[in-house]
Image 1 (tube, rainbow, N blue to C red):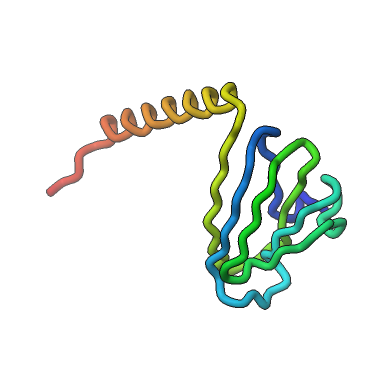
Image 2 (image 1 turned 30 degrees about the horizontal axis):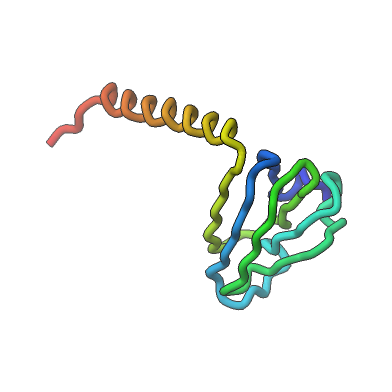
Length: 116
């Protein structure tokens, strides 16, 4: 299976990710997080982590830290924290958030009032 067929993503090289799962025992084949050896093959993995309740995984993102999972339909409960250590990336994300918040406020102002 190629990564384009699965859920996979890459972030900034200065990002860190912590995932904590909130599911019961995991029986399904899909939805298990895979730490991959490269960007091309979802089956070329160094480790596979089922999202069983209480499982916690932390890793540092880089240009060579690939991860993803096979498709899964149904609830998959995970709390994920991301943080960055590069001030430039923080400033970029804060600027993006300011623009997004401004656009949302503008959208609320332009939306027609609802009839009571």
